[in-house]
Length: 271
Ligand code: SF4
Image 1 (tube, rainbow, N blue to C red):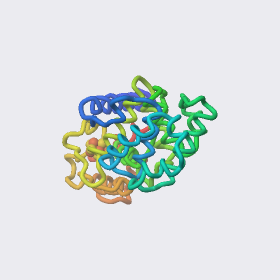
Image 2 (cartoon, rainbow, N blue to C red):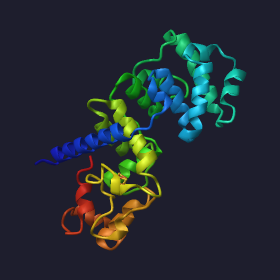
Image 3 (cartoon, helix red, strand yellow):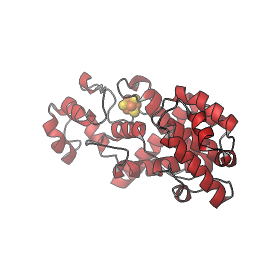
Image 4 (spheres, protein in one colour):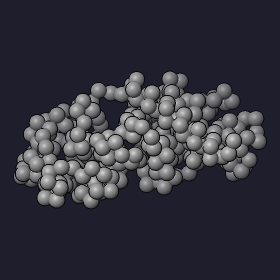
């Protein structure tokens, strides 16, 4: 079997597990009850740096006051900021308002239907464009945020400093989102990071990705039961597997050479 076919198989298995997880565990959230590009946009902007529980009542009230991009575009700044009051990071509200005006002025009040066109709206970067394009329009557009960084780093055993701008993570996210149900796949990644693969207490024992994951608790060493900050995890993994983080280079150069290197072998499957 070639290396690329191993990678493809692994991507397919991770993909299937994520979708099964989403079907079984997704939370019932208002923006999922009726999906439109505008509602997805508002929810994603509100969710930036704000917890879901906080966002839900604000989202519901905002949708009552400004049910469409037209309604938002016609509002005054004071009206928009009043609806946002208490949610914080008010620049988000200003950019959303500006974006709605552009949607009305340049797109007849309809949200642009592709990732590339969405990137032309004020306040929409590649994460938000990927979310709207995949969830509302079914485009195979990837996304990476802080939660997705953590999930992908753990599953694919990526052993260096990471941020949501990391090119390798975007490549993995792109490979994962190709196929049916791209919006659900992206939401599954986000949901996994928010509810199961959490920063300090990942639920590995009930995780559908555990068979694919480079960081699940192993039978080789209890210290492998990660914990932990995604940025530090690989060193811990290698220390657990091989006895010292200094052996990372050896593990990566000779994956599978050690009977304890199950995690390192898994890393080979990372795209
Ligand atoms: S097995 Fe654990 S570390 Fe791996 S994805 Fe699942 S919860 Fe996260």
